[in-house]
Image 1 (cartoon, rainbow, N blue to C red):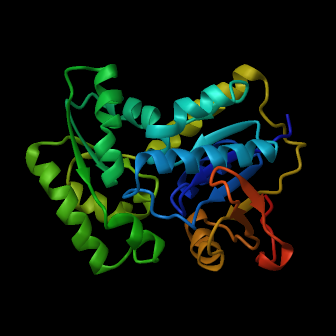
Image 2: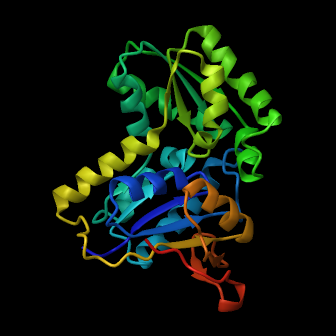
Image 3: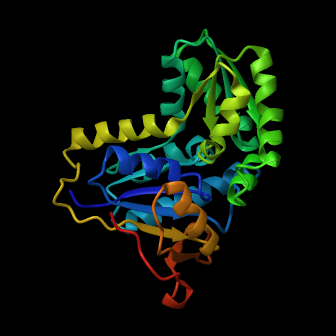
Length: 285
């Protein structure tokens, strides 16, 4: 099947999932949506995030997506089930369940979760982990500084190291044996997090999410074959130039075209902006 896989996040973070799709499913085409007009999601109202997520899902379905990954923990926490109900014929995955499953599979009995304020407030990781194993101790730590640091291109700075230590060290002191990166932006801080985590396992949900996606597509017989032409597309609802520059660095390949998408009067409606609002170029392969 030649339809693209839709992936979305509030900004750069979901590129960790896109990168895993390119690695594990190299024949697939990606259409990526960065809601840069509203980044970060972590401090916003849950109802507002649900509106954003359902609007973007509708947009990706309209672009012909055969499957969608909510590469955003906040969206996964509040909008996954409503999206699945609205688009029952399309596989829609979040990142919380796969990340929780990967953490429990380590056999660790004490798990820490690094996440945005909103995700921590939802307690979605605690519920998901304890559904898998009620005996696991879970601590969730809000890290509101992380996303702005990543979006500003400051992931490898002393400022980021300080912010990471402030969030990670309390979980290590409590006895966390594994740490889930509960926001798709956080792998970009991976070196600093690994240093602060000491001997604790660091779990990035992106790979487990894509392996689940691969299984679903195989079951549906909709995996793309090697003959499928690939032309990845990238949309942003706000700024495009910083996303293109930093995103290409994080993705490991150039993003030479970011198409601008604008929110309509109804916040859950999206429409492509005029050509004059677009950054030229496009990524293929």
